[in-house]
Image (cartoon, rainbow, N blue to C red):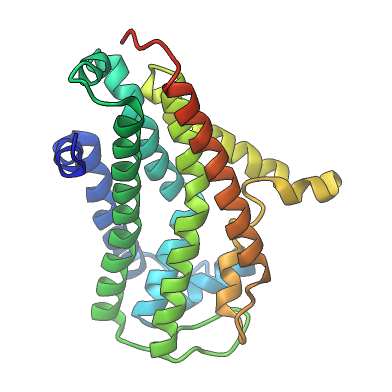
Length: 271
């Protein structure tokens, strides 16, 4: 079962096409919203989000940054959970999983191929979203320094590096979602349950992280460092939380993936 064959199989699926298609469509929707939306209620709300809205139309880098900001809290979570949570559970629900193993394909290899391909498509979605946003934003608003809500403007060249750093950190953090969705995909035959379960658990962690009464317990929640990438917008860049978040993400992902492999190589495949 070569990786390329699995890539082509997943590319032919409607959910892959729709997910990647929406990654292309979302920046266009955001751009149209800015073009045709009213600016009469600029003073409604405030805070970090309001500041990023003000910066979004000041250059391609800022438009891409805004698109990432509005997508990272939910949309990217759903897309990664979809790619990683659907990959095994859907085969089981269709009744084709046992036939794949009857080829025979070693269970560990089957699972590894599916995990690698799911991660590749997740990365493709992340970089497609950002690339399209950067292209559209640059064409419409020009190429200008990267604005920041907490520091001075960052030169465009350095801004590209900061943007790549943000994408890299998001990719690491999203490994938690990928690991959890993949584990649930192994434990259940219902793809919707695996995808929805991963998203709901992430939302639950986000809610708990807002409860200050939990104290230091919040530090071990998967979502505690999910916004640490904002430190890359400061001058100089603040990386302490980024390092902590990356270490936590790798630990969580390793735990979830290890458990998935342990369970899958020992369970009876009847679907």
